[in-house]
Image (cartoon, rainbow, N blue to C red; front, side):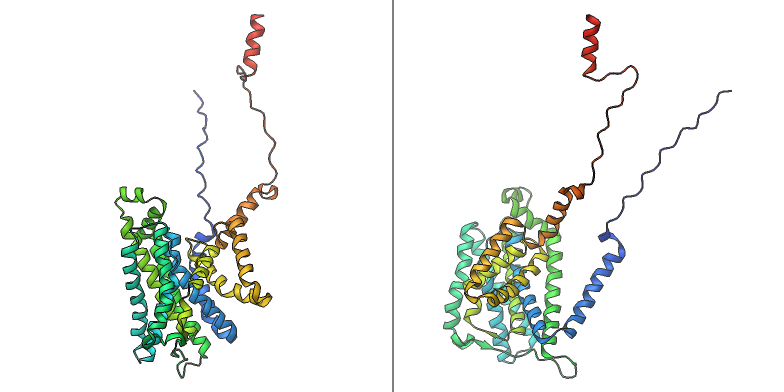
Length: 368
């Protein structure tokens, strides 16, 4: 009777190990932990700390709007500060007229969005440097226009509006209440923008940024999505203008000067273009770095900021947000990261077989 040999059954490969970010407790615990920290932080921070954090939130929202049109859609815009200033003026004027704060907030968002839509309808067909020239004109024209319309803007003196005092009975100080407003409104704007750029509109923005001809061949209208991105960026600029009045409570024609627009652009590049987290880092740069450079030497502020910009561009072209990836690549390339390499094993030879180098030699010996 023939003996049946047991053939080993192939073992199923183990399931791929999930990364730490994919584990449920990290996916749900990290946002909850962050939310708890944001709730507690204003209560334990000093007045100066809360004010600095609130200003970071204001300009992080402004950089986020610039990132939508430049980082994600690839269009040059040098007038984002104009929409921040317009939102601030609408807020100050509405508060002085005694309008409802919710109505003031809606108008501070809608009027800059309408202004951005009108500019985009005319400029989006131009492309390239032509859009840059049109957007440069916004802050250049906005400053003298704000001085002219003194009946609405207060002229060179500007407007002040105090409307964010802590409600009675809340137990909060004014700086704590203002920081909560910035964190709440700014957090919602960041979340909505993150969903936008990660959805179908974000994919369309990326295709338009890479190649407009390819976008047209896929049925994606570059003109339509340029206008959409510019309008969204203008709306976000209006939100940052409202938050600016929440924290600073004063605005003037200097708010929308062209120099501030360039500083926003630098903050976006250093933080990281096309990145939600890079917008937050850009806000940190916009607020913290000038304070640090002024502490070193006020006359060297521009020089030190320019040197920092060049340093980041050379070492981290993707901005500060790309630093973890750059460090991970450096560790993988280092000998310690690679580990000790195993010695090469010679090819196994079976009876009746020879390597390619041995076969010609054997054949030559046979002929000899």
